[in-house]
Image (cartoon, rainbow, N blue to C red; front, side, top):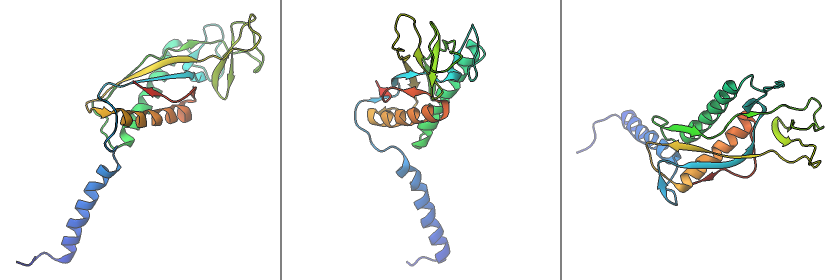
Length: 186
C-alpha cells in the first residue's frame, strides 16, 4: 500500500528522527581504558588570588576570609566539572564534586617583583612565588591536589580525560588557575 500522508508530514517525521539523533552523535564516543563512575582528577597548580586570603593584610583580588576563599574554590571547581560533563552531552543530575583544594593564607608583597620573607609574589593573577630570605632564587609556589567526582554514569578513562581537559581549560580561563601540566585521571 502507498502512503496517504502528505509529503510535508513525511518530511517533518524524517527531520524529527534526524534531529533526535544529533545529541547522540555529539556525546563522547566509546572510550578506552578502565570504566569508572568515581574518577579522581590530580593536578599541580598555583592558586589564583581569589583562592587565597591573608590574615595579615588582604591584597587586591584576594578573598576576605578563609570561608570566602573556600566558597570561591568550591564554586569554581564545581562549575568547571559540571560544564565539562554537560559539554559532552551527559546529564549533570546526580554528579557530585568534592575537592581537596585548600585556601592558602598568603600575604602578597606590596611591590610586585620584589620578595620579602614569608610573603608571596604573583604573576598573571596567580600566586606563583613563595619568598624567603634563605633562598634568593624566588622558589616557585605550587601545590598538588585533587578533585573527586561521583557520577551516576560510568565512563571510560579516555572520556574522563577529555572531561579533565575541559576542566583544565575552564579553571585556567575563568578562575585564573596556573597549572603545571595537564590534569591526570586516576
